[in-house]
Image (cartoon, helix red, strand yellow):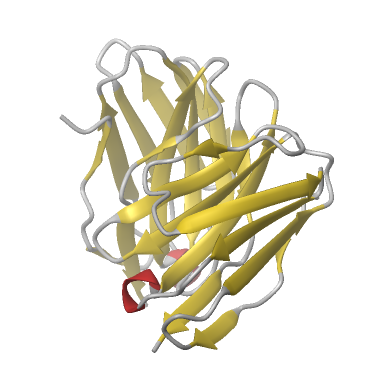
Length: 112
Length: 111
């Protein structure tokens, strides 16, 4: 079974803090993704990566950056957290042209 | 026009009923179609995957794709309270790394 592991289920941070969200997959997938999910807005793509050290902006990259130094690990960074970044963050990975994505359990981030 | 339209519901049904969910889309290049199930405060899990048009059945679940109408459906037979969740449709075109998602449809199965 594909396993995508997100480092934290719940996080509480202060405005202005630097926040790291970590994601690890164990299936040697090429592609990895970061989404945020908000009520009424659905899943929105923040960034994705199709290879080590490669990244592409999604639909809402502002205020976020990413890092992929190893194939299995994809990190989302909030340089200076703001209250409007309070959300559920989901990591996913996929392989192949079908792009079937497998998700982690999610990190619920609250920025106070 | 949004790429993928999905009625958010919520949809409440009695236990044992058939649940019918659907999505419409505008991009004729989509070839890969998925349904995900998401329980409250959890990540989406892949439920069904279909390539191109046709039907696929897995236990109580049936996925249908009608590419001519740009319409996909998910049917849940003999629904159970454990089927209470949000169901998201997703689709992609060949060679495209991105998935287009519907906003999700909340289903409540009442015992």
